[in-house]
Each structure stands twice: as structure tokens, then as C-alpha cells.
View 1 (cartoon, rainbow, N blue to C red):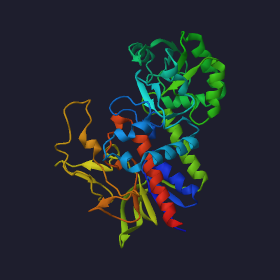
View 2 (cartoon, rainbow, N blue to C red):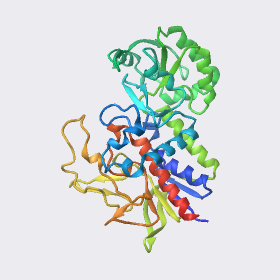
View 3 (spheres, rainbow, N blue to C red):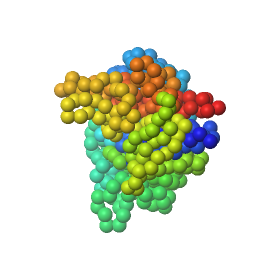
View 4 (cartoon, one colour):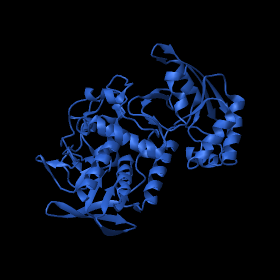
Amino acid sequence: MNRVVVIGSGLAGLTAANRLLDAGLPVTLIAKGPGGLQLGQGSIDVLGYTPARVHRPLTALPQLDSAHPFAQLGADLVDRSVRWVGEQLGFVGSPETNFHLPTAVGALRPTALAPRSFVAADVRDVSSYAVVGVRQLKDFQADLIAGNLNRTIFEGRQLSAQSAWAAFEARTGEIDSANVHFANALDDPREAELFAAKVASVAPAGDVVLVPAVIGLRNPDAWRAFEQALDRPVAEVPTQPPSVPGLRMFNALLARARRLGLRHIQGALATGFTSDAGRINAIKVESAGHPTRVACSHVVYAPGGFESGALGVDSYGRISERLFGLRPTQEDATKLLVADYWSPQPLFAVGVRTDDAGRPLVNDHAQYTNLYVAGGILAGAQRSHEKSGDAIAIASAVRAADNIIGGVR
């Protein structure tokens, strides 16, 4: 049977792998690391800013430039793709409407689908917050969060927040534990109940209690135990990376794919390929210190962009794609950076253009007929400013997978 190779284990790669496996195709996932989900907030953004704050993402998509990935993907594909991934993760919400949720610095982030443990904090339904930090966890600064929320006016409403601190050791005698250490400890529902008692003893008045998003890593019963024991409206707020909610997403999507029969080559760098008659027939991989070849019928390339090294700039300012020699939309980076830190950087909109199926183009033709790209390597978006990267990753991955499935059948 034809084997599809997926390169990259971020949101795009894992989405493509799951979609292909659902259709009964054998899939090999090649990944040099765990992807970028642990750097994210652990929810699914569709569109947060245009640059104005967005309340209805799907309705706002036509406001974007015609070169934006959403213009080619289309609102219908974005809608059904994001809903499909949200269902696999058990998230709530929809691409039609954004939540507006507190962040680790006390800003309000627009996001479309989120874990159930996040949504009680949605500012549309809340005016006051009780922010509880943990003395032994430095990546969640309750005073900073509360202070910035107190400075926020949302749709004419002044928010208010108070902060407090609880003492709780993730590991005995450790005074500065990592987020993941707390999450592993709180996977035990009994520990989650003990933590809830600590929070309850110090939490000030407020419509909703905010706590760091460390209530369990792999056990969903931990959140239920914590929520019931606290007996107040409560929500998790993602901390600085590594993001426990992002790791939950990664673990859930990878575990699902493995149950469906995924072959996962971990810690492997794709270094080259072989092709014949315009089709890629194998990917060269460096794994465990020795090279190998993975035969394939199709490839979904979801390596990320500049942040992952899939796109690079050399000392002369030349932009290139490292593996397949794909042609970027611009090749000279020297005039693509602006001095204003807060402004969008034109460099980060550079990427690869594709045909309607998601195959990279050269001279308006597919460079390889069985190569599809998805996620951060696509050109035309300012993902960090727009808060659009998640939906681009998901929709482009589903497009690639569905075109492969349709062609194989």
C-alpha cells in the first residue's frame, strides 16, 4: 500500500498524519523534535487581529490581503478543519466567535477554540478576577497579571483583579519547580485536590479564580478533581513556555495517531530526497547516527518557517528553503526588516506559494506532483501579529491530506 511521509510534528504535521490515518493510509512521521506546540498557548487561534481586535474570525477573513493563505484556503475549509481538530481534542468554542482570555502577562488574547479549563475566564462574561500564583512557580506572576488586568477596559467595561499567593511544592524541598514538574505532580487527583485547598485558602474575591495552567499533563481527571474541590468558577491561564496546555495538545494528537498505526521516527532530521519524473520517491533521513531512506508515495512537508530553520537567511541576506530547494516568495532579506520592534516584519511573510491543492509552485507549475506543504512555511501571513497560525496550519494540513486521499482512492 502507498505510504505517506509527513515531515514535522507541529500542529500541521500532526493534523495531516491523523487525517491520513483516519482514511486508512499508512503514514510515517519524521520529526527532529516535538514541534512547536509546547511554545504556544494550548488553544486554537483562527484570526485575532486585522489589525483591529477580531470578535468573529470567519466573518473577518475577507478583510485580509489576497496573498494571505486564508484567501486560497477559504472560509469553509478553515471552518470544518478547525472544528474537526477541536473535536479530536475535546475543545469548546467555534471558528465563528473568539473567546478573549487572560494571558501570562495579563493581556487578553482572542482565540477561537480552547480547553474547557480555559473558558470560564472569557472576559465577555467576567468583570473581576482573583489571580492566585504559586510561590514555587516563577513562570506565573500573579501580581503582574492582576496589575495589567486592572488597567484594561474591554468594550467599555473596566476590569478588576486581585492577586494572592499560595505555597505548594511540586517536588519535596524544591523551591523553584518547572511547569512540567507541577503538571506531572498534579496528574494525581489527590494532589490536585490538595492544591485546590491551598488556592481556596488564599483566593480573594472575584468572579473567576485564575491559576497557572499546570493542573495535570496527561490525566483529564486532575482538572475535574481540582475544579470540584475548589467549588468556585476557575480557569487555567497558560504560563510562559514550555506550555503545559501545548504539550497536552501534542500528546493527545500524537497518541491518537499512534493508536491508528502511525510509524514515528523520532529525533530524525530529513536531509534530502530522491525523485523520478517529477515525483518524490524517498526521503533521506539521519537517525541514530546513520542515514536511511524512507520510501513514499506522497509527502506532506510541515516543517515550520524561519523559527524552525526550514527557511533560512545566509550571511549575504539570501533566503532559502533547506530541504527541497523550494522557491520562496522573496529571495533577498536585506530590505525585509523594519526598525520598529512592534511592527510586522515583512520577512516573516516570506514563504512558499502553492497551487490550490497545496503543492509548491515553480513557474506556476507544481514543483513535484506528490509534494504538499502545510503550516508555517506558507507565504503571506503575519502569524504572530494576526494570531492566525493555528488555523493556517490546520486547514492547509487538511487540504493536503484530503487531496492525497482523493488521489489515492
